[in-house]
Image (cartoon, rainbow, N blue to C red):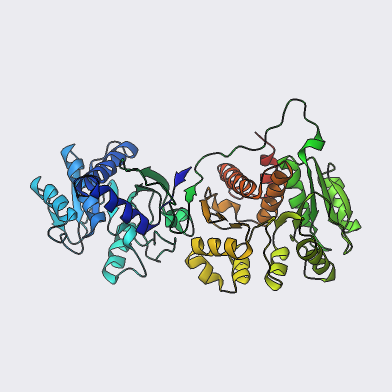
Length: 476
């Protein structure tokens, strides 16, 4: 796991580092620019001609250092600086002078030829709002060259704090992030426009304490362990899941959730549904047990999945009241229609994992979907605080929030944008909880494997279905 720092926190860390290293951030800029040049040469071997798009700030300074380093190894470099040279008495100006001392010059417009690589050092983490008209025109013409792009800290046009992107954003093939990952690279539109992420810490150590402005935040960039199964195991050791989902005509959602819980390793899985729909379980997954979905259900010690395809009828309302209002020991995963009931009758739900998509999150917070997507990090943290539980805000780069901690998940793949993926995630998390994982660990582990396995399947299939993913969950 790697720390994620807010944009302002990174600036604070840089100042602290400078205070302890002679008062200058210049060494950090030289390391950053050198890292860009090294990455360019490593991933695009045989480079002969590179464009560097350079702004007037520190991001441009990184670009000038990279340009100087590339020239030193024989690469032809053209620096395009649409706003001119950096301001005097800045690190960026010093970097420009180093480049100029090598005989490097600046261009304000694009050459007519095409490069082997474009290094985007225009804005970095400083982008907020809309791109200026001159930059929009420049980036549009860069895209026409169809050259690969290496973004420095963030693609131009991406808000590195929120993950919102300008329509004219220059999509990157790779993005190198300095000191720590920034939140906007990992959620919202970030995963779709950053390409492969590379972290370069520049040798900076983070101070102790919270990484995020409101607590700890980390990027789950490696596999999380699933529950072990001892050699003398029997099914009774792995808990039970009861899926109360899939009202008449909406059985697919409940069946997917139940199958995912079984694939995750739960010892016993019951699907509460109509007798007619229960027949499908015998065909699709005979290992499942089924029983009728009724309003007088009495909770036991199982983990529950409440909501997928449940509807908003009287039975659904009775189940919500029984599990969420009356039985304070009931626990599990609340998804889909279950979240709609929670929005109607809000209360703290300590024992439940909430799995809203942006529209459901908007209802839970009484805001618009656009507002949720404008700052997904803040929305996830607010949901967790308001409902006092673990929350997974779904979408590209899902976020897990729990007691002031924020986890940025594996980005998954667009091929996973298919029906039933949320139902499968709910069942997977419930299956992990049944085997003894706490809500926070089950949410992190389930969300990570859900996205990772989907991304792996996307290497083979153009479209990944929920049933494909369920089969993959069972594999090691």
